Amino acid sequence: MKKIKLFIKALRWFFFNRIVLKFPFSSIRLFFLKYYLVFGKNTNILTHVEILNQSFKKTQIVIGNNSIINSYCILDGRTGRIIIGNNVDIAREAAIFTLEHDPNSDYYQTISGDVIIEDYVWISSRATILPGVKIGRGAIVASNAVVTKDVPPMAIVGGVPAKIIGERKSKLKYNLEVFPYLR
Image (cartoon, rainbow, N blue to C red; front, side):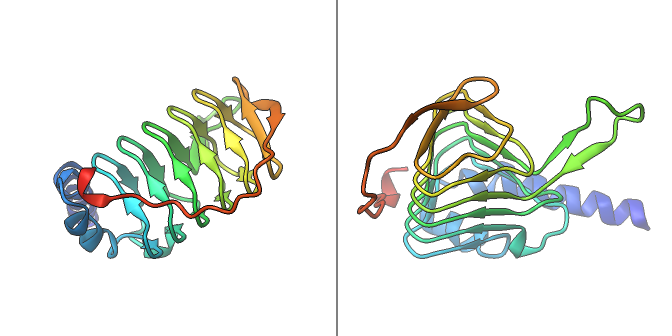
């Protein structure tokens, strides 16, 4: 019986990620997404985003207002939570993980942790955020960076592993706006 329940859960996630999240109209995607995660007003999640969540709890992934998750991103809320603030821009193919394997474990154990992304953060394309990381308000993560540690507010980080390479000077007075029918 347990294997049947796991199979049904897996089938449900497969259908959701491979069919529903590929619908070309954001209104359809967002209608179904409200059953799987929490998101605020004027937030858009584009096509081909992959959502991972073993528990089916909506609160595993929470996204604030005026934020955008671009195509081909991975939001891995399998064990830890992902909390994304307001006016956050996550570019194409970025990956946010709450679970990874411990490379020093003799038994290939996993390590998990929540990921918190504060307001006005910009995560560039193909960046990877690992478990247990907090990205401070207004920070920027450069393309292809791998974030393994907390990022202070207004810092610009890049590289593998990500290190501070600059400081953002913006007063952060904007609200992100996305025209949903183009994506």
